[in-house]
Every structure is written in structure tokens, then in C-alpha cells.
Image (tube, rainbow, N blue to C red):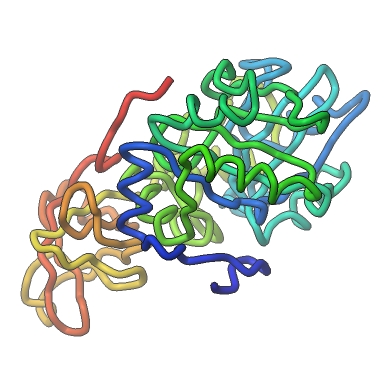
Length: 339
């Protein structure tokens, strides 16, 4: 167990991170992601508030849909938080910030912090839907980025076709007083509990950003390769002006994928150079996340690099004075079709 964003979280369960990772790629795992915040925004004006504060355009979707979006710093356009919005009903929205950013999001959009009233269980993997259906009837019918209200033994729960693994799956917001029972019911039906270790290796293989690493202070959606999250045609939104300025002058750094030529992974915060001789090489960036990929059997990493290395096919990571040779690759590292 470790502290994570103010919560106590499991790194792994007795089965271990590698087994949990492979179970998600091949079967079904469950994560306790209750550390994600939930800010409920309801009533007249809720839609307009979110449109004015967040980068994406809710007009692209509608009730009973979910959307990935960003909340930007109004000064420099960097990502204060990346968020999933569950549009639960006509004027009812559950805004899901990262663990430590709930207060900042609440300050920006208003609403009510209901984080303590529910737990969130992520059911992930190619068998996630069939597994979830055995416990929560109707859940298997909720499509990718769809949202609906269902019932478990008379208790109302909200289920969304979202996740953070690159696999198909669901996330269930359930009342705290029944969360343990639903969790244990899923385990009985074959879901394997998984912790932060597997969650990180899974999201890294899928090329998904982690706030505080690939997103955060000084890192904009443009640098992160996430301009598709920015709805330029919807009008004014928080942080638009500095982001437009960056787009006009051209980005000077960007996120890239790197695959080690050995099993050794580049580690976060290690420096990236253009050649093997680190003493004579040009420093061009820093690793934002790195780990061992159980699927590829090699080290993988995401790095933030400057203009001089944009066209590089090979880069070198300084691992305590030893150059770790890496191929520059397109993200994601692995890609799977999900429903």
C-alpha cells in the first residue's frame, strides 16, 4: 500500500503486477479507482458552465454519453487536469477529475463534491463485459463512452463504458456502503483484483497520459499530442488565448514514445540525449514515464523532447551515467480494438 494523491492505494495484490497486467490483456481485472474525484453539476446552466471552462465540446455528444476533456491554466494554457465528463441525464453531469485535483476543478466549475458518497470500480479486459453482466445485469449493453443508471440489489449505480487500460471495459460508481459486496461478487465470478502497478504498465502500453507526468504544469494539450481534445470552433473556453498563441508560433516540444533495445526501461525524470556519448551529446528532453512492458518484453517510455530531436529515430537516455539506447516509436505501443 502507498499514498497516492491523498489516498492509500494498493500497488499490487498477492498475484503480483505482471499477472494482473496479463489478466487485463487476456481476461478481466478490477481496479478500485475511488480516488478519482466526482463533482456533480446539475440544473440550469450546467451545460453552459462546462462549455466555458473545459476544452472539448459537449455538443459533440449528449445525455448518457461520456467525454474526455481538459481544464487549462488560463495563464499559459497548460493542463491543470484531464477529466472524464459523464453526462448522466439532461442537466446532470458527473465530472471526474484526478485524485489530487478535485478542489481545483470544483473551484472552476462549481457543483457538489460527492466523492465520499461513492466508490468507483473499474472492470477492464476483453472479458470485462461478460463478467460485469453476471453481477450487474444490463451493464454489458453500455457501449464505449456511454453512460447509464442501473441497479444492483435495489441500489442505484452509474455505469460508464470508460477505462484507462487500452482494453474494453466499464467503470461503476456505486454507493460506498455496498462497494465491498459488489467487489467481492465480481471476484467470485472470476475478476482478478489489480493495483496501481498494473494500472500504470497498462496505460503506458496504451500510450495514455498520466497527469503529473505527461500532462501538468507547463505541458499543454498541443505538446501532449492531444489537440483533438480542443474544440477550436466552439467559442471561448478557459485557457484558449495562450493555447492559440502557442499554436500560432508552433510547438517547441512534444511527447514521443521510446522503446528500449533491452528489457531495461527508461525511468521517469531521466534525461534524453541525441547520441551515445552523453558528455558530447545534446540534451533534448526528459522521460515523463517509463516501465517494463509485459506484452513487448522490453522497456518502454514516454518522453518530452525539444525541437532539435523531432525527427530522431534513435535517442539515448542517461541512466545513472550509462546511455540506454532507444528507438523512437509511434504511440500507442500496443493497439487493440475495443467496442
